[in-house]
Image (tube, rainbow, N blue to C red; front, side, top):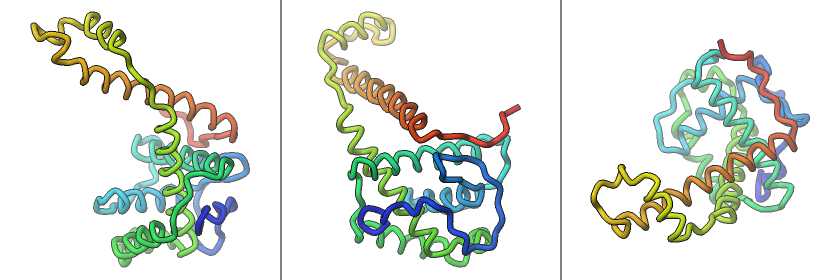
Length: 207
């Protein structure tokens, strides 16, 4: 993904010998369980956590959530490419790759995944592009909560606030309502782009 992700290498890499089942699809791009495992390890490093293996257990929430996250990340990155925003500076990408190599090199679970340098670069750049575009999109969706809306929330939930006056909570209420509004707008947008890019989760339905 150099610069504009160079541009997402939308076809899977075949250099690795590990065989893995398909768990999701966005347009023509097929996501495998192995890719989800690689992606989860990269996520942990970027988040500053100690990387641990993600087991492929299709009925467990951790794996199902990881699949959903990769699917969403893929379509957000596709949308970023479509609008030519959310690009990643080479320095940002190289710094992330350096941390990933330092944190994962030599770990047995990582070695078993046989992630190539091209795959790691591709998935890392995609994550950073998606993150940057999501920040851009979130900023464009932030709304203004009026004093009247905050007052209405205070009145509706009066019992929560005890005897303290509205003025004591006004700014906190406005922040909370703005965050709720943003999350709802993002959820709606996510549904729109998932339909646009024909996202399919191929995992069996949970029991």
